[in-house]
Amino acid sequence: SMSGVRMSHTACMLANGKVLVTGGYSGSAYLASTELYDPTLGTWATTGSMSFTREAITSAVLTNGKVLVAGGWNGVGLSASELYDPSSGIWTTTTSMNASRNQYIISITTNGAMLVAGGAGTLRTAELYYPLPSIWTISGSMNNGRQQHQAVVLSNGKRLVAG
Image (cartoon, rainbow, N blue to C red):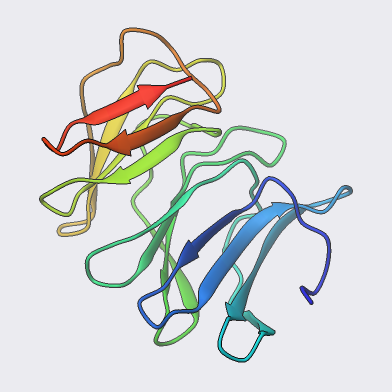
């Protein structure tokens, strides 16, 4: 089983088939810890911790296999971003978003950039993260502010954001 209670965390499937579970809230503390679930063995293992405690986050696997986690909440809104390297189990900080955001969506684009949109406080804004050269740029805004929403990629490459 997992090492402890966590809620408002994120999880993503790595290229090696393991599931990376990151951050969250234990009920009494914000978490920076990270765990790996191996579905083949049915086992949990701890791995490197993030530099920042954070909940209300989302993660995404980049085309290079690294995992991006950005923003979140630990008593204040965060704009800080970190990358997890599955080959080493180490988190490194990268450039911060232009705005702090939590309870947002993240989605990979056709050119490998990561789109983040919305967030608590019903943000309308969106940003794109480009892994090379590791920069965030402001993108268009949604018509309405959103938090705790969902997005899907349509067959034409556009995103449908709802909620």
